[in-house]
Amino acid sequence: MPMRVSTTVLLCLALFSATAQQKAGKPADVRILETKAVREGDKISVDGRVRVTGEKPLRGLVIIFDFRSPEKEVVTSQRAIIDEDTLETGREGVFHSEMADSARAVRYTVRAFDMHEKELRVANPGPYPVE
Image (cartoon, rainbow, N blue to C red; front, side, top):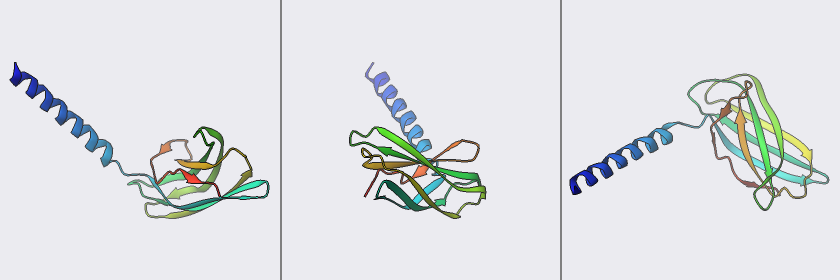
């Protein structure tokens, strides 16, 4: 009986580590290189740079900023279109977006989609502070 238990445990560990390697093996499609959100009067301005890091070119790039409350709940989202053309791996894009100030927005996270609304994997998604 103890041999069966140890064999089962080893099998489970092998399956778990194989699954973890698969998940860790998928590279991000987009990397946030820098981003900053600043309150200016009654607006919040968000600026930054991204790089396409995936293996395949992207058909357009849309960045979504999820502004979060102190309780980490999304209070509003804003989108910025980086480019509607095909973006090759290694290409960088710049974004600038303005939105009406939301007093409860203290941090934000970043998501990305292609022009066909397929969600992309993002490296360095945040959260980032709203200054």
